[in-house]
Image 1: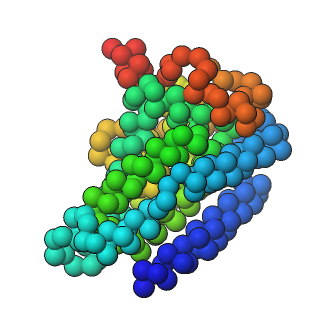
Image 2: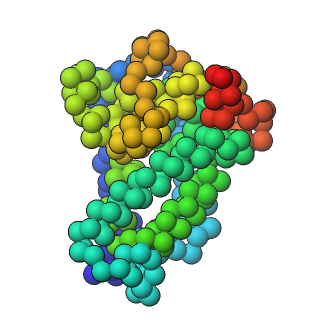
Length: 280
């Protein structure tokens, strides 16, 4: 079973990624939420090029990734769910929820710590907001995120099937909640009780620091609601809000070479601790 999962992982993840990105891009063309300001050819080519760079660096940097570590933990009885005797469904469901909580806390940390914000802010410097924004992360942030994920997977002893499903869900929801699609207000209101919607997550990409440092969830909205980081709507409404951060506002900043060196440029302003102090 484990060998089957590991062998099928690349195919499952690639199929889910290609299917989701294709669906959301077509949906964006058919029913866009906001007017597009930057030509797609600039953003899409550079955002997809970044995905290629991230994937190559990740594969070269880690001998084993999350699903592989879950299998190894199961074989060697590492981690909580391989030590305590709980029903399989408890280990499965608990692993997915706790991994999602870990991603939420990691996201908060990357906003709160200046050095980590330098890495993460590149995700926020996209000047438009669409499905490809959900793929736009600095390679060093990807490495740090994987190190954190491996630590959590190992500590939990999460089942390999649960880790694979979590990875697919995380990737799919990131593409979905970054998409520029228009959902009926009633549908969004109901859906965001269970899932982070594009309108909910778009608030997080506002230039307003109070809004930038809110709505950290990727998959479910419960952590933001429970831990006080939920903001329902942007102050200037979705059509009027400005996307990005104040430091990097030129089209040249959207190119791959500029994205890769952004952590080294300028002050680390705009992170959560600064914003919180400014509000006092």
